[in-house]
Image (tube, rainbow, N blue to C red; front, side):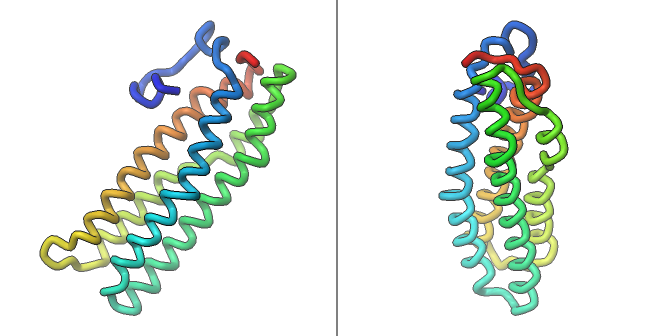
Amino acid sequence: ICKIAVYGGYVPAGAELEKVIVEDVTGFLRSSHDSYKGAWLPELESKMNAVLSARTEAQKRVISEFFVKFKDELRRHFEMEEKKIFPSLDAIGKKGKGTRKVFKEEHDNIGEKIQDLINLLLKYLSYGNADSTVTLLLTELFFLKKDLATHSRIEDRLIQPLLKGGKGNE
């Protein structure tokens, strides 16, 4: 997990993949989901509300609707992983097998949605001199995008091979 997070191009294979402790991977991913849902999203929402409070009703409506759809999609993505992917990973840890099909069909790129939100904010809102609330919101969105990209790399480079081959240690 650390190598994937730190070294963007790192892909474990062969004997190294065999050493993966499946429960550690699912534990990490479950904890990260809790962090996203319990800390990141509420903080983003608070910053978004602060930014939108000084905007026109039309701007508030468009950006709020997009943000609500983004949050809902992110939560659905986490729910799908928690209900479909994690049980398959738990099965690998217990029986040495799982299903890759569920993961491949359901996994999508949330980073694109974050970039869409960033683009929407940058393109359609006019900013006064050094609007710190906007700066904080955009900074948080960029950090979330980067963190979710790492999260996705972990899924792509650990979970997919584990689901495909049913390897890993209990």
